[in-house]
Amino acid sequence: MLFRRIYQFLIVYIIGILLLLMIKTGLSLSDYVIPGVALIVETTGQVFKEYFFDVMNTMSVTILGQCLSIIMAFTVGIAGRKSSWIGSFIKVTAYNIQAYPIVALAPIIFILLGDGFIPRLLIASMICYFPLLLSVLGIMATPVKDIEHFYIVTGRMRWQLEVKIRAFENLSKLTTVISGSATLAMAGTIVGEFIAANAGIGYSIRIALYQSDLAKIIVALFMIGIIISIYQGILETMGEQIKARWSISKKGEVL
Amino acid sequence: MKINNFIFWLLLLFLISTTNSFAKETKVNYRLKWLFNTSVAGDIYADAGGYFKDAGLDVDVREGSPEKNAINELELKRADFGVASADQVIRALDKGAKIFVIAQLFQINPMQWIYRRDKPEIKTLQDLRGRNIGITFGGNDETIMNTLLAKAGIKKKDVAITGVRFDFTPFFMRKVDVWPVYRNSQGVILKDRLAREGEDVYFFNPADFGVNFVANSVITSQAMLEKSPDIVEKFLKALLKGWEAAMDPANEVHTLEVVKKLDKGNNNLIRKKQLNATRNLIKPSASIKIGTINMEAWKQTEEMMLKEKQIKKPVNIYTHLIQIK
Image (cartoon, rainbow over all chains, first blue to last red; front, side, top):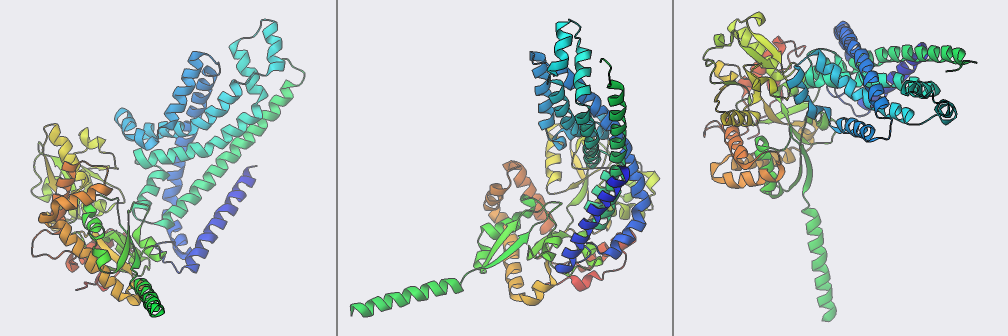
């Protein structure tokens, strides 16, 4: 799974670079518009180490942000699964917050939290949590009638059991969404670094953009892509293992 | 007789239609560096005032943004003319772009720093010591400030440098003392907002301390200059005529009217103040003709960028500056 992720990314990246180089050659563009291979290689040599540590910095916030968003999505999802007034209120609030563009919220985040690690973490989790929330809400709001009916009629149904049943029955969906949300968490962290940080790969990309330095951006994209592929590969492998273990432990057992 | 009349009218109609098609205006695309606002009043005025039309040009004046880079557009042939800052031009030349500067719009760089009057005035560069200075890392204000600090022999540890963005909150919250602004746009807005809070401000202009980093200029491609020098000349004459008219205090009301149609973000009073500030930067004295290329300032800009390692080798910038008479 892990290696497949990496070589799939490399294929996409190389195709992208080749396409850019074809456009560069076809339209006789200078290195300012699209850098040539020599410039990309030279820039890689100059910034590789710096960008590697930047991406790792971003990655650490991404992982924390994703964990935070998973907690947020499950909390809101579980609280909002009921079709009661409070449930719908939580859902509407969660949806509305997501509708606000992060750049518009940035000044408020800055006033409240300053410039640095916390705003990055918050923005990363805000961007990442919504798709997670939609899935969690969808799963938690849909009863597994066959199983739940038994517990309801025997009077043993509690909310914890309800959540457990629905999560277990949709484990495959949940692990796919969680591993997929890693890219969103990464994107969220990078956006956070763009608008409210002095560290991370998003911050370095912002500087490169100011200088119209596409070679640096291409190197940054490579670093981001490769690291996120590894992370997603690890998450998917973990998901497969959890599914395999649970499916074994579920055999013949009552929940 | 009737047939003769008919043929006469037919011929006349044909002549009119063919004359019209010959007189068709030449289509030209012009990419600005930033959004429509008072700092591009001359560009707007040249279009709205019919100066381009009079020159036989149908100019599509397009807004710019950080992503819409005029140099890229020239190379991709999506624009024929554009506005770019000196650092963009020099970086592009360093990477082999074939572009030329045909007019320098700002004689004084609008990139300056704002600070409150309750702080001591910066009379010499030594007065920067101990201040918390905002800079946009990677922006040309970083190059300018580094040059100023080096000129004064001030080490980085003698000042506090804070990275800034579009959001002014750290300045309002007094976390940063000296904040980089475009003097004629953000500078006016910030000054106005602070005045409403009973605070007055100073502007720190690097040019007052001998650092002349060139700002926005009009550029075109080498291909355009070689293939259509007549269009280049017509375009530039019409554009500078528009700028002269827009900066003329006698036309202030009309200028503000045409800017207002495109700039929805500011009120009339702010636009008026922005126009006054822009006038001082574009035409600092009556003797300076708008569009004049300040060769020495360009050379200094190149030297600064070379020293800051923003370019790898000298680009001999003066060979890419064309002062069209």
